[in-house]
Length: 227
Length: 300
Image (cartoon, rainbow over all chains, first blue to last red; front, side):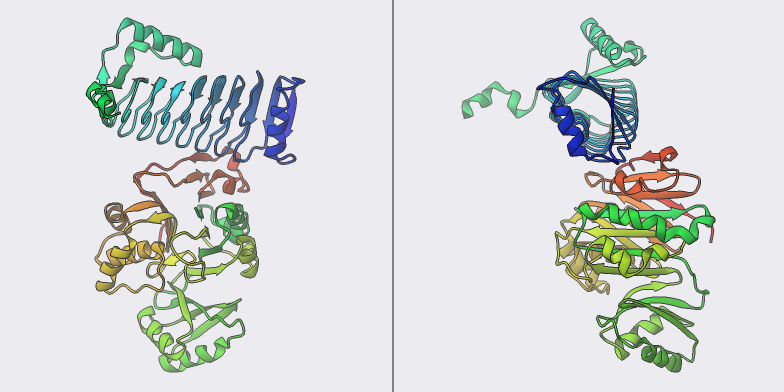
């Protein structure tokens, strides 16, 4: 196990050391201490590592992650795990806005609340939030799953494509073209599997499912003649 | 961009350390605002029939004693004053309504940065660390303080365009964001008699609150109206004589983080600015909700 104290080494040095593990993997387990809200911690990893960040992190923590398992023992600023491709990012505290933005794959677990625009334009990631999410969450979400064990803010799933959204609590309002949908057996089993992977104990039957009504312009075959 | 920070002490024993606790918070926001910086500090309150003015003259060697003498003579009232760099704090047994026109007439080049019983506003162009040093911020005492580091977008980098903007007696505002309707709103407010010194959008937000408060709104009501009438992005920190308030616009794209312990409430654009506070490891740390007013006040 290697420990990096961010009061003694820079974020750039930490990230470089983590990136160097691609060419030659000398250490699988990393601990980052004294993060003190620094931005861009553990970004762009591309190796099967575990990284434990002990404290609050700033913006874009664990962005563009591939393969690595990153845990933040605190809160994170905006854009945690943005554009993640694979791996697991777990936030023990709260996340600010745009958590998991545009992420293509992997699993993002937020044990506290997520702010506005959680999962904005997500493209295949699975996001499980134990608390609530803010307004405009899953805006233009294209693929993947968003599970919210608490409540969702205004305009959930606005202009949605194909993301499956599961919410246990209340939804303040649904965004354009987002509707509640029937929870069929395959959805219960999908949700159950997501909760298991996230290590969250909830009854899948207590959730409601939301998705795209597919009524916006881009879903109309007649508009194909415009091209 | 811009950075905003605020520190409100719940534990009076810390009042002598307010400036020392706040200095690293302001400096931590240099990356968000290296153009100018300023702060409004509350404390050293004058009696109810006195007023405290923060005045600024562009010449650091300006002889404030002459102005003090004229005020003493004209108002037959006691005057206490001290200077700090280009700024002087005047305490006079008179009202701001009487004093401000007198100063404008006697010393037109003197700018009134703030008026009230408790507030002092200090601001300059330059790096936050330099400004903290210029005014000896680490040595200052008080009950609460809000500050701003500016990255200019809507108007020029000048002392006048620096924050905080005073919005009436003992009230001031710092702003992170940009307003889209400030030109139209400025014209409307000018028709209502509100005066503006700059082309700055944040000054319009300050003037708007001044106008609403003159209409009889409480601070909470004025801010509720602001949510409807201000078009743009904002996170505000607002200082009052006995407290401070934080509010974000409904879109909430401008960041804010709050921290609370038994000793204090602190606010900053980024968590990085809070890391030097005592006990921050165990503080309750959270992101304020959009379009929601947060107020902390101590008993009068």
